[in-house]
Length: 139
Image 1 (tube, helix red, strand yellow):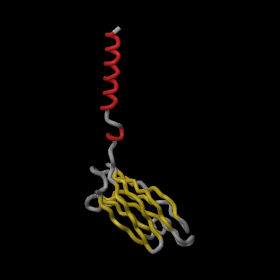
Image 2 (tube, helix red, strand yellow):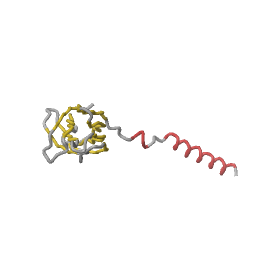
Image 3 (cartoon, helix red, strand yellow):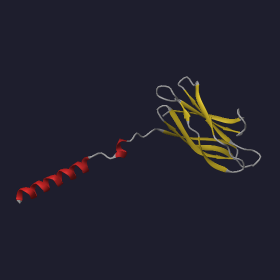
Image 4 (cartoon, helix red, strand yellow):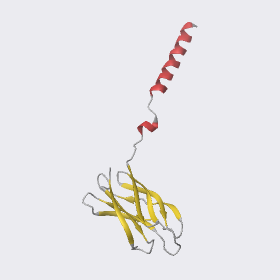
């Protein structure tokens, strides 16, 4: 009886020790670098976060237009280390309101994009009119 009890206790201690010492899944997850962006012209803007992945970027944020007849959109460009364009994407645009957007863009080069250019535009038919663009470097 003592042998079974000792074996059971030993198994329980080993199991508990394994569970307590095992790394959590979140500790092993890769944290991708992020950069805040803000491109403002008057009372209109596009602002949010750039997430730098290995071969792409994710750009999420909010864009704002104050007049229904003057729409605003966001265009995102990925650039290599020599600032040559790799890809682009643009949001749907807003007119007289503000809304969240997501505009991912590829950067299919080793190391991914070195820079991202974010532009506040007129949300027009391609090519849009760019009111202001800012370039953000990979951290």
